[in-house]
Image (tube, rainbow, N blue to C red; front, side, top):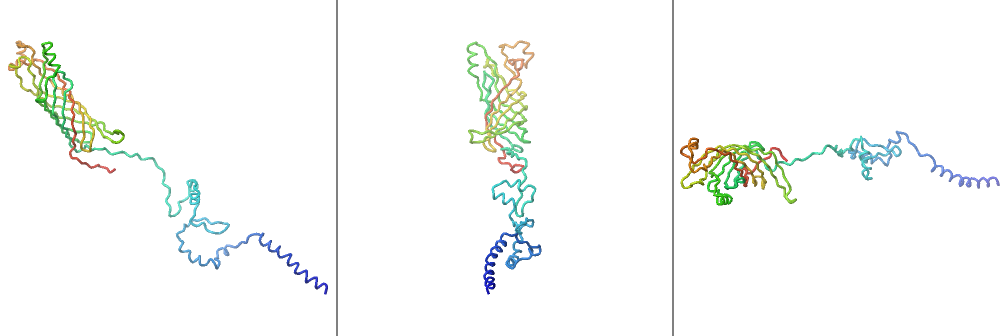
Length: 335
């Protein structure tokens, strides 16, 4: 009876001692492992999720799988993680294909320089230039003129045109001429101009723009021109003006010059032009009585004309406006 009582007391004690050891062994042991067939088979609780899988077919096909947990990485990529962390994604995604639904980073190319179009096109347009001219290099007589020029631009830089100058009744002797005649009792032969016309060719070598008071952009161009035509002139009688009279005679006139234009609009501009009119001039004979030699060398109907001619350079400054017709134009290429 005593042995039975000892056994009955020892069994519960052994159970109390060994049970905690079994529990501790279960928690601190190795993790459970499953075969491929067991891991692929869905658990009863995951069955509804498997049925909803077709709705998530938009997920990328190439996804990494966590080997430890067996769960898919989903649509989250390394680039997304690096972007969320604020890091440089260039090195992390080098050589990797862009994720579906995202755009690849554009490849950096050379810089493209924008060239502004010409402010006012000239080709195919007519440039009308009314102006007022003033002679600069004759100290004894002032030749002033009302001028009108028209040029057709064959190209953007080359034009052909006509110019016309009217001098009649707009000129007069200077104070220097009067002072010299009064002080020395000598006179200087001077001539009178009536009108002139020229055929000119214009070339525009430079054009550009500049900032005016840092608020306005002004466009400009510079041209050179040259051509030939005629001019009507005659000597102004200073010796016996009551008896000597002269008629206007036509002379060949060659002209060269250059000018600059400042655009106010695409069809209106102001300009300055410096032009030299070169022609052979006939002067009055300073002798009161013509000698036989002079009479033989000159026309007997005009014995008061000097036998010599003088190459005259009439340098004039023209100030006027430039009007382009038609007023509008179209660029060949869009901006």
